[in-house]
Length: 232
Ligand code: IPE
Ligand code: MG
Image (tube, rainbow, N blue to C red):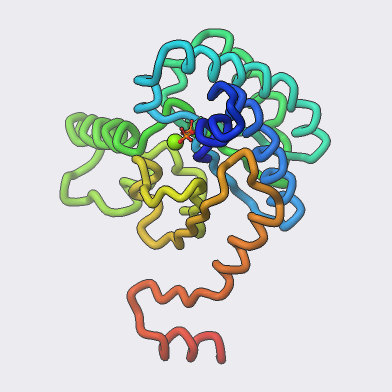
């Protein structure tokens, strides 16, 4: 979700106004995804690197997070959406952690869509933790180094419960991954749009999905093999 600050700037407003307006796009996207039968949406809301922004902006973002989570809880329940979170949640301010935990608990039986917030998240942070977990098992003799495979790594990451993403959308005209789900996006399709996040609507999501549907995902194979399979 990128472009909140620039969106505000074009309107002569403070950056936080852009973040506040970005909440509408979050609502649009979660609702549209649920309606379409998408099972998981991960929103990159705050990265490990975002802690280096001016303190005033960080504080305002954390405050907005608490307000949004509390305010949106009834809608999540109404739409049968389960809220999840990945990242270094312990680094969040207490009020944030508490309202988040409350929403995670209250929505835990919802089944229509898993809405995963990446908060104080970065993929390298996650990978370091995963490697520590695996190394610990090796040290304790629970796992042999020679037995480490892709599943070992999948299972040690904070995303172990979910399938790897099929489509990654980045808004605001930036063409970077910015430390997001690096392992998990190995075969992900990328979609870039110039739309700034606060302007993002359901239609923008439909457009991204339509583009995704037109792609041939070969996973290293050749086109003929893929076509053969779909003709079977
Ligand atoms: C939102 O957009 C992403 C967050 C970190 C909350 P930005 O704040 O990165 O907006 P730009 O890139 O400055 O326009
Ligand atoms: Mg940005």
